[in-house]
Length: 170
Figure 1 (tube, rainbow, N blue to C red):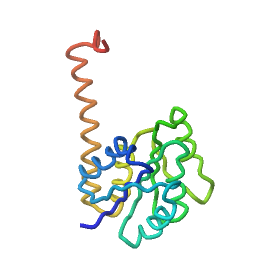
Figure 2: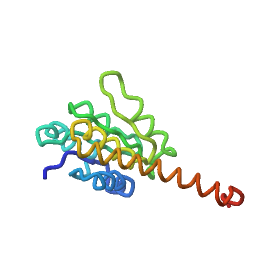
Figure 3: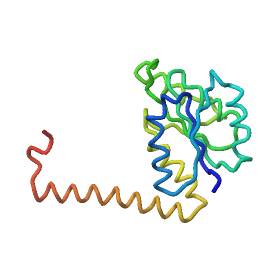
């Protein structure tokens, strides 16, 4: 099946963070692709990727970037598809804040949905929710996933009631 989500990143060193988005999409059974597209080192590749994404059948793009983090915003300025930005705390980052602000502070007219620093898992979930808005099977998987999160919390509450809360945070 052709990919519905494109996961792109500025460098292969970002893969250790971006893998979580792929893992979530796999869990929801959503076909996707993963590649490196650098806004600064391969700008023409970035433009071509963004221009052709919709025609190739993509519905959402997840773009991870560290440092100056221009990739998500530049891609969003070219494609009509929703773009989810994942700020990455990279080796040249100012504790990740430069990436967060570069992706978050987009000008009006060029929105980028932005998740927390290194939160590629949430980007995968958000992409799945977007796909789930028109694919009932994916929507059901998301509903089941969220129910499992709720159930995990309730199990912890019951365990604390049974075993007590003392010494649980050592």
